[in-house]
Image 1 (cartoon, helix red, strand yellow):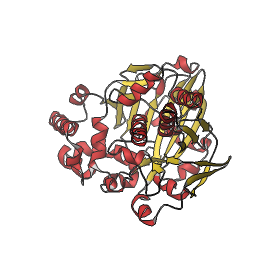
Image 2 (tube, one colour):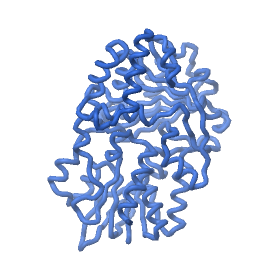
Image 3 (cartoon, one colour):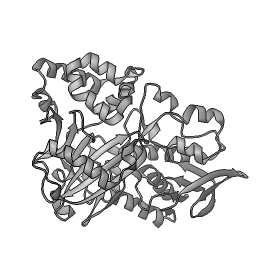
Image 4 (cartoon, helix red, strand yellow):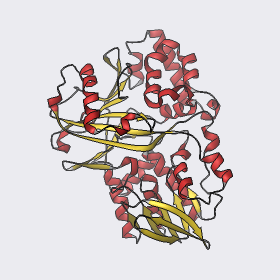
Length: 419
């Protein structure tokens, strides 16, 4: 059986790897020049650095298993996560720090702890049809919700923050652990190893190759791309459903009406390489104070050693924005100039001269807008067209998009295809 896989991210590469292991002929089409999709990296010093910040949790069982299977090494640490509230870093990354969280009164801390404990143990099916904003505001209390959680929802979902389904928030709690894992050498090594495994088994990975159209001709599938046309028995699209519908005109109207649906925001990251630490110990900083142009500040080298990156101290300034947001049209220099005054608000001693290098990355369709009717529009893996399958981040609901759930979905799909 000959398979075309559209998209060379975690999902497409893992599915291709398992199919190749099973003796199937596979060809992966990826428009970027580097494999890995949203989890792809770039070289900094002797290591790979992720274009968009990544780590694993202890609950990410599938990713951990695959990384071990491929002979790669994960390192585990407990880095410090804080929130910027009223201009001060407040640690909140464990049950103990919740009970010690100074911005809230003791009764508020206990109330939030009870709500979070309930959600951690709840069945997500119980929570369907409710928005996180209204439910959390009611049960946590207006003041505590508006101080911490509402700014995080606004930072991630903007004007749509009050429409997000409660099961999505459940998953954010349910899946997280205080210990975080990072792949020694960078997560790009996982995708390089998968590409090597695919090619070693006779498969092909076409990087820098844009898929332009996919058609069914005489019972087989023709993939038209920027590098030529190929014919296959089956096609697996790991692209967003909306993009799949654009590339495959034969998908019927009723399918499009139900699944070519919803909104997704793009991801944007400015990465700064500094000649010194920005903060002493903080890894992840949630920006809960209003008026900042980025939603998170991640000092990666308070999690990993600067020595891995030639002594550079690396800081991500991350955003999710609507894809027509002006941020996506700005140059790196314009974004950096806009962000620097806000860095100085957070760290008054910061000077622009500390910046030695910088990089900027952006990606469309990175964060689905998970509304209460989202689950009604999740496409099944098998489409109405014989031999056409879809597998994408829409299908990991209620979990958030991430490497573990991409790899897990790939494993399930291949079992369905082969067995």
